[in-house]
Image (cartoon, rainbow, N blue to C red; front, top):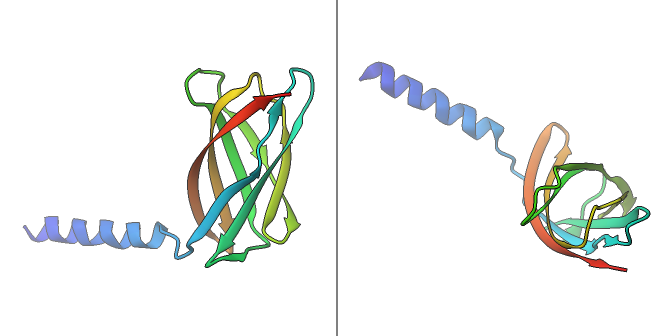
Length: 120
């Protein structure tokens, strides 16, 4: 019983250490579009307690919600005022999921956002 209690305590400590104290809110400011030929801009807005957050490392893994087109890795650039921009060439319009990873000072935060991509 003592071993079980020790293992559970250790797991609780590890899980607490891995969680982020940040409460980032992430929204899609400009969703990409599909035109079949070129990249399109994609912009996320990151805020904390209603204020824009700068200086983050932002990466997203995009995948289509209802079809398997694989996963598209996208790295974002900090444009200031909480805006993070990149560009991406998607294989088709429709419903997409962005699995977003945000990191700052060794702490990380993850969020998934569902958005629609329209055809140009």
